[in-house]
Image 1: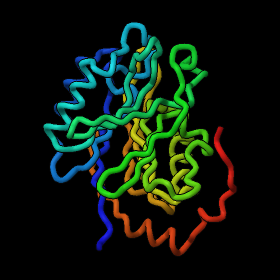
Image 2: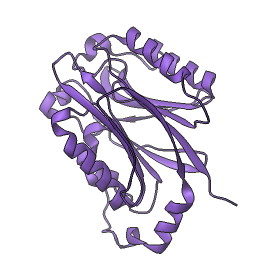
Image 3: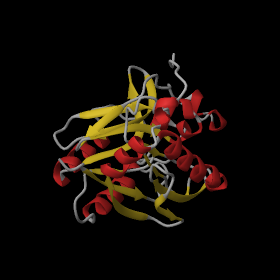
Length: 260
């Protein structure tokens, strides 16, 4: 049986600061403009608000309007819609990456590494477990922004996943680190890596260059786009990944450890 393909669409927007309605309207238009096959459509970190430290004003419950909108879009366009937003649950606030399927099922990952430099750790509760989802025979490890700087958290010790997905609000002054670390994660984990970032300027004056990127398992650049909004669909192939892991079985030689 031939290995399956994965059609993944990356949306790189200019997020309107803390304006949920304006952002949802923009994404609705961008998603409607996607042509051709798509399994997964990816929005960036805190796609509805920008990287805000005001969860008391902006957080929504899991049965709130934005989650319902994601479910409606997934059903209407017959795709999985994913991206992170501010969620309130049991008195805690989370930077939560949702994975919304067209049948209404929702998986999620709570950002593990909170960005203390921007005081994210003072406003949000960290996650404590990884989330690996599946679509069309592909296993995808969900991550958020600052997680990228911590390679142990992403370690693909037993080839548990095929794609490492990062959604981000990664500022322009550290774009070199963004590009370099995405590429490194692909090489060291022998997987595809997709990183989806934003462009524009947020309400705190931070500038974002985008540079949403997809790297192959040898670290080769498959797509990258900077400075302007973009919607782009790529088709990833499983066979080259399987051949690489067979011919160069580096993952078998990795150090063994347990994350506590």
